[in-house]
Length: 222
Image (cartoon, rainbow, N blue to C red; front, side, top):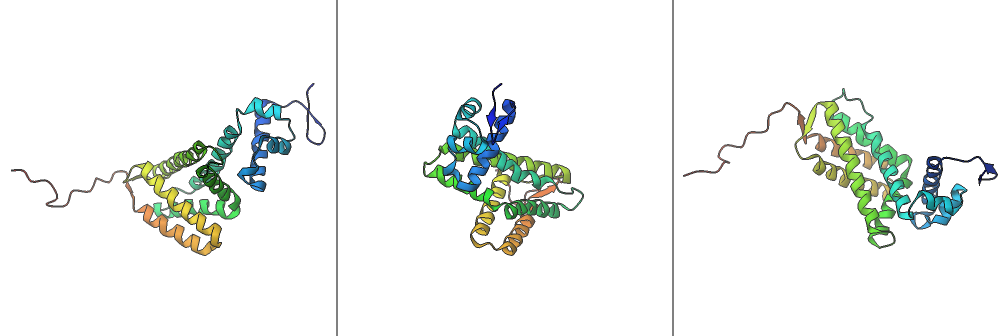
């Protein structure tokens, strides 16, 4: 029977279990050494596996990084919908954004890693597609979160959800980066609450009629 050794013999594991171990190992390597430290050799050593197992489960280092990125982003956004929908929508948004903020405060290294990947991609140290994937996935999960929050609250966004999602990502990226630089938690909280109030103004009850055009704003015929 084949065995892997992590300080001793281990029973055979399923491919899914091995994949999970490699993903967890990659996250530890990233947390400790940054994106530059994520090599096949380093990840396999961290997981206690031979490199043959890696190449059986992942086509490349970039595929591994894609999966790690997806899980990191989903983890950040997932908590933001874990709020009580019975409260006023502005308070729902405040609570949702503060949950995102708490994730940053408690695990700042995750955001740092995401920024490292962005810079590495722009400089050509990793495939540019990885950076595009990062923000594409960020937009997808943010759009899903915004749609769920609005549905639970019985409101609709006055702008297309993808446009709202881009605004949210831009704001959270900026707030997070400033906090990582200056460590001012109070300022970050104040900014998040202010942004939540502005964001709530972009939603109306689902049964609200579209605003009527202002008098004289239509085109004249004749």
